[in-house]
Length: 283
Image 1 (cartoon, rainbow, N blue to C red):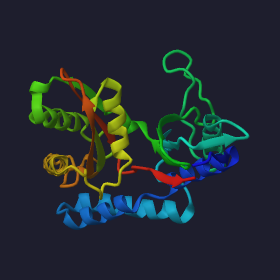
Image 2 (image 1 turned 180 degrees about the horizontal axis):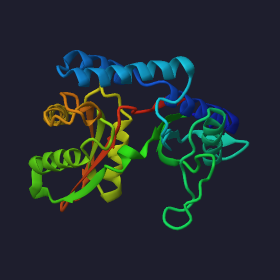
Image 3 (image 1 turned 30 degrees about the vertical axis):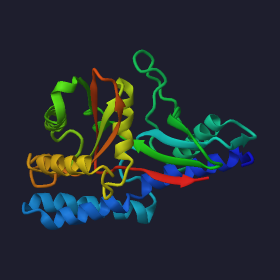
Image 4 (image 1 turned 90 degrees about the horizontal axis):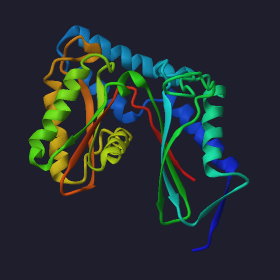
Protein backbone atom coordinates (compact mmCIF):
# COMPACT_ATOMS: atom_id res chain seq x y z
CA UNK A 1 0.00 0.00 0.00
CA UNK A 2 1.44 3.36 -1.02
CA UNK A 3 1.53 6.41 1.24
CA UNK A 4 -1.56 8.59 0.90
CA UNK A 5 -1.15 12.32 1.26
CA UNK A 6 -3.79 14.36 3.07
CA UNK A 7 -3.63 18.13 2.95
CA UNK A 8 -3.72 19.83 6.35
CA UNK A 9 -6.52 22.07 5.15
CA UNK A 10 -8.77 19.03 4.81
CA UNK A 11 -8.16 18.18 8.45
CA UNK A 12 -8.84 21.77 9.53
CA UNK A 13 -12.19 21.82 7.77
CA UNK A 14 -13.18 18.37 9.05
CA UNK A 15 -12.36 19.22 12.68
CA UNK A 16 -14.15 22.56 12.46
CA UNK A 17 -17.31 20.88 11.19
CA UNK A 18 -17.15 18.11 13.80
CA UNK A 19 -17.05 20.54 16.71
CA UNK A 20 -19.74 22.82 15.35
CA UNK A 21 -22.00 19.86 14.58
CA UNK A 22 -21.50 18.13 17.92
CA UNK A 23 -22.44 21.33 19.75
CA UNK A 24 -25.54 21.99 17.63
CA UNK A 25 -26.92 18.50 17.05
CA UNK A 26 -27.50 15.95 19.81
CA UNK A 27 -26.97 12.32 18.80
CA UNK A 28 -30.00 10.33 17.70
CA UNK A 29 -29.19 7.74 20.38
CA UNK A 30 -29.52 10.34 23.14
CA UNK A 31 -32.64 11.90 21.64
CA UNK A 32 -34.32 8.49 21.37
CA UNK A 33 -33.34 7.68 24.95
CA UNK A 34 -34.87 10.95 26.16
CA UNK A 35 -38.11 10.20 24.31
CA UNK A 36 -38.24 6.68 25.77
CA UNK A 37 -37.50 7.94 29.28
CA UNK A 38 -40.24 10.56 29.05
CA UNK A 39 -42.73 7.82 28.18
CA UNK A 40 -41.67 5.73 31.17
CA UNK A 41 -41.55 8.49 33.79
CA UNK A 42 -44.46 8.71 36.21
CA UNK A 43 -43.60 11.95 38.00
CA UNK A 44 -45.00 14.98 36.13
CA UNK A 45 -41.96 17.12 36.96
CA UNK A 46 -39.61 14.45 35.58
CA UNK A 47 -41.63 14.25 32.37
CA UNK A 48 -41.58 18.04 32.10
CA UNK A 49 -37.80 18.25 32.50
CA UNK A 50 -37.26 15.59 29.85
CA UNK A 51 -39.64 17.37 27.46
CA UNK A 52 -37.74 20.62 27.99
CA UNK A 53 -34.48 18.85 27.13
CA UNK A 54 -36.03 17.38 23.99
CA UNK A 55 -37.37 20.80 22.98
CA UNK A 56 -34.01 22.42 23.71
CA UNK A 57 -32.19 19.90 21.51
CA UNK A 58 -34.59 20.51 18.62
CA UNK A 59 -34.27 24.29 18.92
CA UNK A 60 -30.48 24.01 18.97
CA UNK A 61 -30.52 21.94 15.77
CA UNK A 62 -33.06 24.14 13.99
CA UNK A 63 -31.29 27.40 14.84
CA UNK A 64 -27.71 26.04 14.87
CA UNK A 65 -27.00 27.27 18.37
CA UNK A 66 -25.27 25.35 21.19
CA UNK A 67 -27.22 22.66 23.03
CA UNK A 68 -25.65 23.97 26.24
CA UNK A 69 -23.82 27.18 27.14
CA UNK A 70 -20.85 25.05 28.28
CA UNK A 71 -19.54 23.99 24.88
CA UNK A 72 -16.79 22.04 26.59
CA UNK A 73 -13.11 21.36 26.23
CA UNK A 74 -12.25 19.84 22.84
CA UNK A 75 -11.43 16.12 23.07
CA UNK A 76 -10.53 13.93 20.10
CA UNK A 77 -9.95 10.20 19.69
CA UNK A 78 -7.95 9.66 16.51
CA UNK A 79 -7.17 6.46 14.61
CA UNK A 80 -4.26 7.54 12.43
CA UNK A 81 -3.44 5.25 9.51
CA UNK A 82 0.21 4.27 9.25
CA UNK A 83 0.13 4.86 5.49
CA UNK A 84 -0.90 8.54 5.80
CA UNK A 85 1.26 11.63 5.41
CA UNK A 86 -0.13 15.08 6.20
CA UNK A 87 1.10 17.73 3.79
CA UNK A 88 1.26 21.54 4.06
CA UNK A 89 1.29 21.43 7.84
CA UNK A 90 1.27 19.06 10.79
CA UNK A 91 -1.65 16.99 11.99
CA UNK A 92 -1.66 18.53 15.49
CA UNK A 93 -1.48 22.10 14.18
CA UNK A 94 -4.34 21.34 11.78
CA UNK A 95 -6.48 19.96 14.60
CA UNK A 96 -5.83 23.00 16.78
CA UNK A 97 -6.70 25.33 13.91
CA UNK A 98 -9.91 23.40 13.27
CA UNK A 99 -10.89 23.72 16.93
CA UNK A 100 -10.01 27.42 16.91
CA UNK A 101 -12.17 28.11 13.86
CA UNK A 102 -15.09 26.07 15.19
CA UNK A 103 -15.23 27.92 18.48
CA UNK A 104 -14.74 31.37 16.96
CA UNK A 105 -16.79 31.05 13.76
CA UNK A 106 -19.45 28.87 15.42
CA UNK A 107 -19.95 31.27 18.35
CA UNK A 108 -19.15 28.56 20.87
CA UNK A 109 -18.07 29.51 24.39
CA UNK A 110 -14.32 29.57 24.89
CA UNK A 111 -13.62 27.83 28.19
CA UNK A 112 -9.92 26.88 28.18
CA UNK A 113 -7.34 28.61 30.39
CA UNK A 114 -3.58 28.67 29.82
CA UNK A 115 -2.41 27.45 33.22
CA UNK A 116 -4.43 25.19 35.52
CA UNK A 117 -3.30 26.71 38.84
CA UNK A 118 -1.73 30.16 38.70
CA UNK A 119 -2.47 32.30 35.64
CA UNK A 120 -5.77 30.80 34.46
CA UNK A 121 -6.00 33.24 31.56
CA UNK A 122 -8.52 32.36 28.86
CA UNK A 123 -6.88 31.31 25.59
CA UNK A 124 -9.86 32.93 23.79
CA UNK A 125 -10.15 30.19 21.15
CA UNK A 126 -10.73 27.03 23.23
CA UNK A 127 -7.35 25.58 22.36
CA UNK A 128 -5.38 23.51 23.09
CA UNK A 129 -7.43 20.38 22.50
CA UNK A 130 -6.90 17.02 24.20
CA UNK A 131 -5.89 14.58 21.45
CA UNK A 132 -5.71 10.81 21.98
CA UNK A 133 -3.99 9.22 18.97
CA UNK A 134 -3.72 5.55 18.05
CA UNK A 135 -1.63 4.44 15.06
CA UNK A 136 -3.56 1.84 13.07
CA UNK A 137 -3.02 0.05 9.75
CA UNK A 138 -4.41 1.86 6.71
CA UNK A 139 -4.42 5.09 4.73
CA UNK A 140 -7.25 6.99 6.43
CA UNK A 141 -7.66 9.12 9.55
CA UNK A 142 -10.71 8.52 11.71
CA UNK A 143 -11.60 11.31 14.12
CA UNK A 144 -14.18 11.15 16.90
CA UNK A 145 -14.58 14.61 18.41
CA UNK A 146 -16.54 15.91 21.36
CA UNK A 147 -16.85 18.90 23.64
CA UNK A 148 -16.66 17.86 27.32
CA UNK A 149 -18.45 20.15 29.72
CA UNK A 150 -17.02 20.41 33.21
CA UNK A 151 -20.11 20.43 35.39
CA UNK A 152 -20.15 16.68 34.81
CA UNK A 153 -16.40 16.24 34.29
CA UNK A 154 -15.83 17.52 37.83
CA UNK A 155 -17.89 14.65 39.23
CA UNK A 156 -15.74 11.96 37.60
CA UNK A 157 -13.35 9.76 39.57
CA UNK A 158 -10.65 7.09 39.32
CA UNK A 159 -9.74 4.42 41.86
CA UNK A 160 -6.96 1.85 41.98
CA UNK A 161 -8.77 -1.28 43.10
CA UNK A 162 -6.92 -4.48 43.89
CA UNK A 163 -7.93 -7.71 42.12
CA UNK A 164 -9.53 -9.02 45.30
CA UNK A 165 -12.20 -6.30 45.00
CA UNK A 166 -13.66 -8.26 42.08
CA UNK A 167 -16.77 -7.29 40.16
CA UNK A 168 -18.54 -6.26 43.38
CA UNK A 169 -15.80 -3.73 44.07
CA UNK A 170 -16.19 -2.31 40.58
CA UNK A 171 -19.95 -2.01 41.00
CA UNK A 172 -19.64 -0.35 44.41
CA UNK A 173 -17.18 2.25 43.12
CA UNK A 174 -19.32 3.12 40.11
CA UNK A 175 -22.52 3.39 42.16
CA UNK A 176 -20.81 5.38 44.94
CA UNK A 177 -19.39 7.82 42.37
CA UNK A 178 -22.80 8.42 40.79
CA UNK A 179 -24.51 8.75 44.18
CA UNK A 180 -21.89 11.29 45.27
CA UNK A 181 -22.41 13.23 42.04
CA UNK A 182 -26.13 13.51 42.74
CA UNK A 183 -27.76 16.38 40.84
CA UNK A 184 -24.49 18.19 40.09
CA UNK A 185 -23.82 16.75 36.58
CA UNK A 186 -27.24 17.93 35.26
CA UNK A 187 -28.88 14.49 35.02
CA UNK A 188 -29.95 12.48 33.18
CA UNK A 189 -26.34 11.40 32.75
CA UNK A 190 -24.36 9.30 30.33
CA UNK A 191 -21.71 7.35 32.22
CA UNK A 192 -18.46 5.96 30.89
CA UNK A 193 -16.58 3.31 32.86
CA UNK A 194 -12.99 2.36 32.10
CA UNK A 195 -11.50 -0.79 33.64
CA UNK A 196 -7.91 -1.98 33.31
CA UNK A 197 -4.66 -0.70 31.93
CA UNK A 198 -2.89 1.73 34.24
CA UNK A 199 -3.98 4.77 36.24
CA UNK A 200 -4.15 7.05 33.19
CA UNK A 201 -5.39 4.37 30.76
CA UNK A 202 -8.48 3.66 32.86
CA UNK A 203 -9.43 7.34 32.73
CA UNK A 204 -8.89 7.44 28.98
CA UNK A 205 -11.06 4.35 28.56
CA UNK A 206 -13.83 5.92 30.63
CA UNK A 207 -13.80 9.04 28.46
CA UNK A 208 -13.78 6.94 25.30
CA UNK A 209 -16.77 4.99 26.63
CA UNK A 210 -18.85 8.20 26.66
CA UNK A 211 -18.05 8.62 22.95
CA UNK A 212 -19.72 5.28 22.12
CA UNK A 213 -23.40 5.33 21.23
CA UNK A 214 -25.53 4.41 24.24
CA UNK A 215 -27.55 2.16 21.95
CA UNK A 216 -24.49 -0.09 21.42
CA UNK A 217 -23.57 -2.59 24.15
CA UNK A 218 -20.11 -3.90 24.98
CA UNK A 219 -19.36 -6.82 22.61
CA UNK A 220 -18.39 -9.01 25.57
CA UNK A 221 -21.63 -10.42 27.00
CA UNK A 222 -20.28 -10.25 30.56
CA UNK A 223 -19.63 -6.53 30.33
CA UNK A 224 -22.85 -5.93 28.40
CA UNK A 225 -24.73 -7.52 31.31
CA UNK A 226 -22.75 -5.40 33.77
CA UNK A 227 -23.64 -2.26 31.81
CA UNK A 228 -27.32 -3.16 32.03
CA UNK A 229 -27.15 -4.05 35.72
CA UNK A 230 -25.38 -0.84 36.70
CA UNK A 231 -27.73 1.32 34.66
CA UNK A 232 -30.74 -0.27 36.35
CA UNK A 233 -29.19 0.26 39.80
CA UNK A 234 -28.41 3.90 39.02
CA UNK A 235 -31.93 4.56 37.81
CA UNK A 236 -33.27 3.22 41.10
CA UNK A 237 -31.41 5.99 42.97
CA UNK A 238 -34.29 8.41 42.32
CA UNK A 239 -31.95 11.32 41.56
CA UNK A 240 -33.95 11.83 38.38
CA UNK A 241 -33.95 14.49 35.66
CA UNK A 242 -32.39 17.75 36.92
CA UNK A 243 -32.03 16.03 40.31
CA UNK A 244 -35.76 16.43 41.00
CA UNK A 245 -36.52 12.74 41.36
CA UNK A 246 -37.72 10.14 38.93
CA UNK A 247 -36.74 6.97 37.11
CA UNK A 248 -34.23 8.56 34.74
CA UNK A 249 -30.98 9.34 36.50
CA UNK A 250 -28.91 8.01 33.58
CA UNK A 251 -29.70 7.44 29.92
CA UNK A 252 -26.87 5.03 29.32
CA UNK A 253 -23.74 3.44 30.76
CA UNK A 254 -20.88 2.16 28.63
CA UNK A 255 -17.88 0.09 29.75
CA UNK A 256 -14.51 -0.11 27.99
CA UNK A 257 -11.74 -2.45 29.16
CA UNK A 258 -8.03 -3.09 28.64
CA UNK A 259 -5.60 -5.76 29.94
CA UNK A 260 -3.94 -4.82 33.22
CA UNK A 261 -1.20 -5.82 35.67
CA UNK A 262 -1.58 -8.93 37.87
CA UNK A 263 -1.51 -6.73 40.98
CA UNK A 264 -4.13 -4.16 40.01
CA UNK A 265 -7.59 -3.34 38.70
CA UNK A 266 -7.85 0.39 37.90
CA UNK A 267 -11.38 1.70 37.47
CA UNK A 268 -12.45 5.15 36.26
CA UNK A 269 -15.88 6.71 35.99
CA UNK A 270 -16.39 9.59 33.57
CA UNK A 271 -19.73 11.30 34.02
CA UNK A 272 -21.38 13.26 31.24
CA UNK A 273 -24.61 15.23 31.28
CA UNK A 274 -27.32 14.37 28.74
CA UNK A 275 -25.51 16.64 26.24
CA UNK A 276 -23.14 13.80 25.43
CA UNK A 277 -21.70 15.51 22.37
CA UNK A 278 -19.64 13.62 19.83
CA UNK A 279 -19.41 13.38 16.06
CA UNK A 280 -17.04 11.42 13.85
CA UNK A 281 -15.64 11.32 10.35
CA UNK A 282 -13.13 9.44 8.27
CA UNK A 283 -10.72 11.35 6.04
